[in-house]
Image (cartoon, rainbow, N blue to C red; front, top):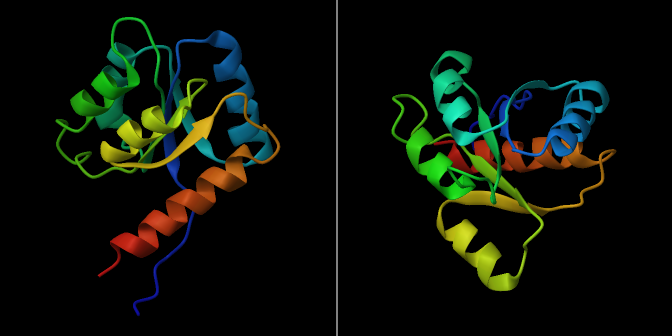
Length: 136
């Protein structure tokens, strides 16, 4: 098996809720020491994604305008981001909702509310597993 470099991902986080963005930023940047660019909408994410070149999308599901699913579809059309792993975050995590999000290629669905102290390590673990799975 090829050794895969398991560093940490640059994360594009998209959530319309100011409080969730603030908590997530603390959880990922302060606690997890990760590089994060946050956006309040799918439209904003589309404006910054190509320049930021994230390694991972962390998307809220229910947002006005563009949903998380719509945002993912649009992000996938940006050259270089077609295969960027995605994790969805949602308060609506019924089995059929999770199954639908996983069918879109989500690496994981994280339920809100989440534990800010373990969020970064959980995301890094999911991302590293994606890197191992994608290795030749």
